Amino acid sequence: MDEIKNKINEKCDELSLMVDRAHLPIKVGPDCYLFHATPKDDNCSKRGVCHQERYYALTGGKIGITIVKDGEVVT
Image: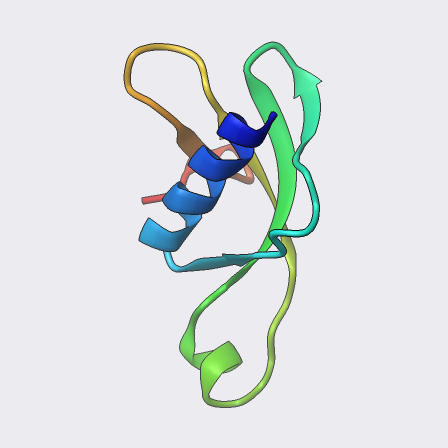
C-alpha cells in the first residue's frame, strides 16, 4: 500500500493537487483507489476558498498511474 500511496502523492504533486498524506487511499476495485485532494488554484491560494474533492487513482497497465475526477482524466 505504501508504494501505491507514494505513486498517488507523486502524481498529485505533478497535477497541483494537495493530498493529506496521513490518510491512505481506499481501494474500491481492482487497480482503483479513492482519495480526497484539494486543487491548488487561485481560489484556494489567494482567496482561501479551498474545497476538498473526490478523485480516483487508476493503477493498472503500463502507463503508470492515472488520476480521474468526475469520469474525466485529470491532466
